[in-house]
Length: 221
Image (cartoon, rainbow, N blue to C red; front, side, top):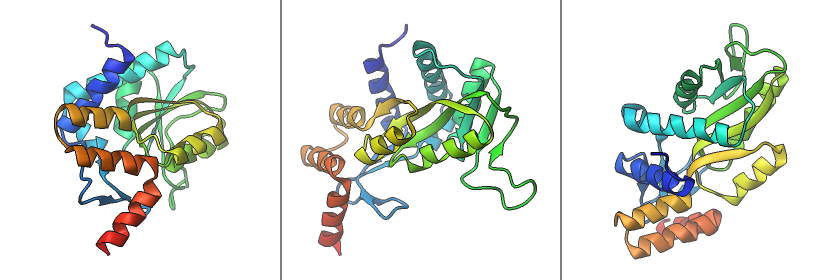
């Protein structure tokens, strides 16, 4: 049975919570690489250990491409967390795959896009999650420099932050995600994984991550 989009996003949110791919800690927040403190940490690499969830994610990506009629000749994974999901999707759709390094390789041929990619080919980028959107949108330039046309970016999860919305508007490439921060906190509430005060804290962070992070830093510092 095919799930509706809302049911699917809710199911994936529940699955991510169940396997610990998403952790919620409003009272003892995580620190992102940017230094921002967050009550949410997402590690979709854990999906690699769960074949059923891998298949669910892969099929959902393929369904989006069909529903949206996204033109695609090559699937591209972002290094490193997007690579396995790109590989499973490329295999599922019988398409070639490449991956994009975070920076130009410092030795050998000095490539940033690895694999076989020809000028004019239409590429769909696969990412594991969207936070600020900076790393996801950064892969567009090297792909275009290689002559490719980026049709869309797919991701498993998005925090839904305004900063990311602005980043994607600037490149004018559509983003499609399987589940979101809102789906996540609804799933957390339903499964009683976080208290009411914790949910309020999560909502506060989402509304203004920088202010929430600053207040917590001031409180703990």
